Image (cartoon, rainbow, N blue to C red):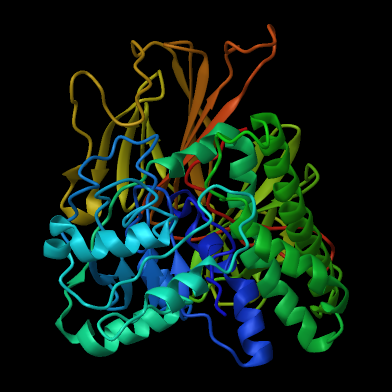
Length: 540
């Protein structure tokens, strides 16, 4: 008996890397618990396959994969004439998975399809007599995988009967669990196979955008879970029972991170409607986000209580869940101060750059948290009096903002007409192509640019425009952070089935060489600080 590491047939090109890995968590749990191995992973039916997936599989213990495609609802051609029928799908990290992905010479119920043994006798005859098959696949070890096709259920002893009745001195037919085929083939022919590394693009993977905000919540929760688990790990050192009541919800959330990306987003079958499919995806998303949010909040509160403190001044801790030391900004909600304040790193006693960000209805204290240790935190204290670290932040000259790394010019309609990379000899990274530039919605450059916030940590320019549609763009540069943050919000009334409904779309883009992920802050007085980077694309 064998099962794949994947929970279902998935559109994995639309899933975050971490969701692909976490979706294989449950088989890994069974492997560890019962000392078994699941060396198979699959990417079925979809005619495309993202580059890097083989590396994720190999790193999770998979050695083999079979891909049979539908050849339906696709723009992909030449599926009947693939350059290689069986090969090692390689990653840039040197890992590889033995991949059987054959040309579809007949239909998707034959070799190259997702039900290669739908008619086992026909598959047997085809493999032995079709000249094209024999020329493209010269190996005597042949696998025909899959029988169920689109049936809800298939149970039969058909394979056993066919194997017993058609094996002979010249032909041995084995009822395979797929693994034994791959082991046999690799032992006899693996040494002569090519390792091939390539992207086959994405297609059905983009269908997750049909539930854009629901999919975005899943992606944001995947990032947030990293912080929640890191905090929970530190909390559990002093409180070993912290996770005991969460195991069932944790396991369900991990499984759901695989289930959410199940491939049949368009619900093309006759069993369920598209409305039912969308409701199922919303249910899966709720089970993921509810677990993540509660774990995050509980771990944050408990870690806050475990951090020792002294004195009477307000303190907060900035937590870094990543595996490298990190410098980034952190925002702490505060009341409007009646006097000037500054922020000190408790571990060094030195002042750190800070500023007040007036983001209605909240007012935030933004600090530059420097060299926060991996999977650790730093504690900061808010003190009265003006500080001396209020200078040295990004500067503004008209509609151009500049720091040590970049000089960026924002047009009135939110387009970026220039982005100079100062670390590479003042290299211009924006080019006008057909009248369009970076972050260009296609407007006529009408609108207005104002400085929304400015201080020792960051400067944000805000462009408000109605061309070509009402929208607001915010561009932020930081002190000592190699990143450009761009946020676009479309606030116009879009055409919907319910007239008058306002749909607001927020897209957050990040540019820069240092990648950081959302983290959190634990606070001895329950204030929260966040080191954060917006997800690549979010909608709301």
